[in-house]
Amino acid sequence: NPSNAITWLIAIPLCSSALIYLIGRSCIRFSKNCAFRPAKWLAVIALLATAYPLFIAGSNFLANGPFTVMYNNIAMEMDGIALLLAGIVVGLGLLAIIFSATYMHNDIGEEKFYALLTALIGSIIGLGLSADLFNLWVWFEAMTITGYTLVAFYNDQKGSLEAGVKYLVQSAAGSVLVLLGIVLVFMQTGSVNMAEVSSAVNYTTTMSYIIAGALFIIGFGVKTALVPLHTWLPDAHSQAPSGISAMLSGVVIEAGLIALIRSVGAIS
Image (cartoon, rainbow, N blue to C red):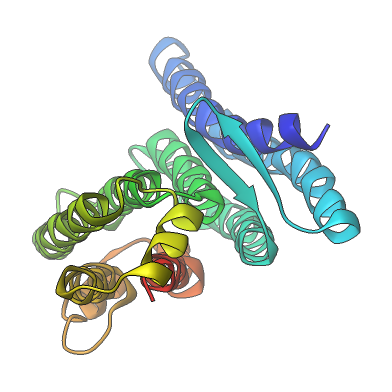
């Protein structure tokens, strides 16, 4: 069922992240010789399990075109961009976990690393599927929070904390601007659904849409590291664990670009 596939596509990585942390932490806390660290293997299993609903939803899209699933008033749409983003983040995330198995071996907080990485993947999938502006912002925030904690993973190092704080402050400022843009759009159209907003804009154009578009470009531009909003990026790449650096350059920035394109496209 494609509708259930969308639900599981988001639920598996998000729910698995909590289990990964709890099981990994319990093993370290209650076992004197926890040579077998289960967190990395649980993360691999979670992403392999996520690939199945992704295949179901992707097959339905390729056969029948884009489709939308409603959760009360929340719309999640599987289209070409959502399928591409989900496929990239699951594949790249799996490679990052496999690579990090050696890199992160026996590091303090290893289970937290894999749990947050899995949650980051789930947040990016949700962002790609969002069909309304507010939930696009919610998933964007979830991606930002998990990304910040991963950038500042080595919190005993001054450089890592500095990079994390810079990333957090700039992303938070960008998020406020995006939220203000969403408020302006809602005031003009009475809706945050992208399809409804796009239809409303076709009949009337006001300065509010121009201002909202500028707010979206600046706000999402921080996450996309558009010049001159890119100053957090060099520090984040140099201080984050290597697997997270790969995720930042390989998919997180692109997810911000997709959010930018979707939001500006809805009002243009």
